[in-house]
Image (cartoon, rainbow, N blue to C red; front, top):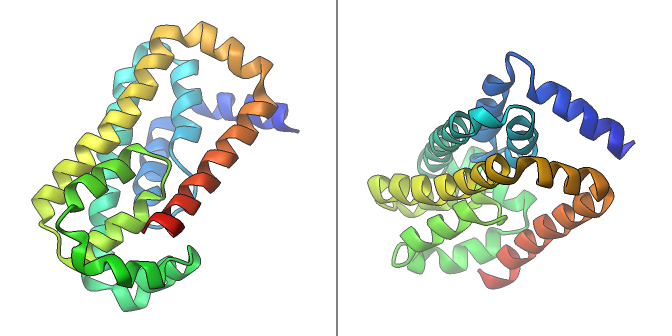
Length: 193
């Protein structure tokens, strides 16, 4: 089943509308959606390695725009939208505890969340709630998200054939590892904040 899903994702990655789907996933993941754009970025670069820069750029820009939407949710729609998202991640109490000190280190927090597997959307919303400087937020997001997506895309472009063979031989193990990283990111969020 996992192999069929992998093959289907590679097929979707080479679809003529894949770049728009990548942009949509990147945007929504930064503000409310659960699926990280890496799940589409990786097969897209593997399917069309010469387009790695374009894919990383679209992924980054859409993610930062989605982050700005998350910021808006926090700043203007926290009670209606932001709070339920925080509750879904069981992060409400921790969020309230760190809100006051958030902006002192907000740029580094946003950068780290943008680059790591920690759920970035929590920090986009938090930045809006705490009133972090929007320009600082956008720049930290651009560097963090861009660093992550360009690094992934570049490595796939540079070592694509080798990486693709590695992925295909160890698909089950890598899927498990990815799940562990996501859970570790959520746990880090829960216990470190």
